[in-house]
Each structure stands twice: as structure tokens, then as C-alpha cells.
Amino acid sequence: MSSKKEASKIGDFILDKSKVALFDAVTEAMHREPDGKEWAIAVSSFLMGACCAAHAIIDGIEEHNIIKRN
Picture 1 (cartoon, rainbow, N blue to C red):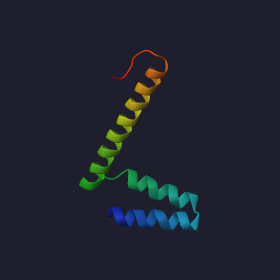
Picture 2 (picture 1 turned 120 degrees about the horizontal axis):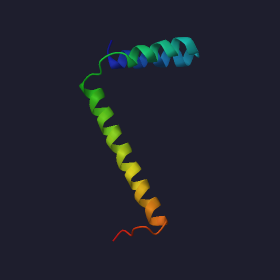
Picture 3 (picture 1 turned 30 degrees about the vertical axis):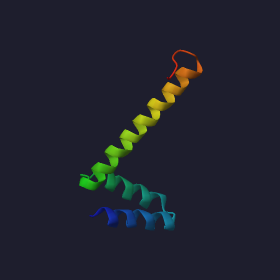
Picture 4 (picture 1 turned 45 degrees about the horizontal axis):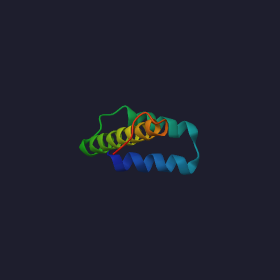
């Protein structure tokens, strides 16, 4: 099943407010091999999250006067 079809299926279940059907659709989507575009999105999302976490850590360290950014 393509990503668009799965997204459409999940969207339909959300609109129908069927928790069981939504859970089943999400489980099905999670247990298949992602395509190239989905891997690229996952990698870029992970990288963005890691950068945001690093930025927050640096800001937290600066607040406690442990280091200073130039």
C-alpha cells in the first residue's frame, strides 16, 4: 500500500472516530518497510530533533554559567 493510500486510510478512520480502526491502520503502517521518501523524512526529522536538543542543552549550560558562547 502506498504512503498516500495509508495516510488517506488513517485520515478516514480519524474522521470516523473509530479508535480500534485507527489503531489497526497505524499498526499496519508501522510494520511495513518505509520507502525512500519516508526514510529521508525520518532522517531529517531525527537530525532536526538532535540539533534542537543540542541547542537546548547549550542554552541550559549557559544559563548556569558553565560555559559562554563567543
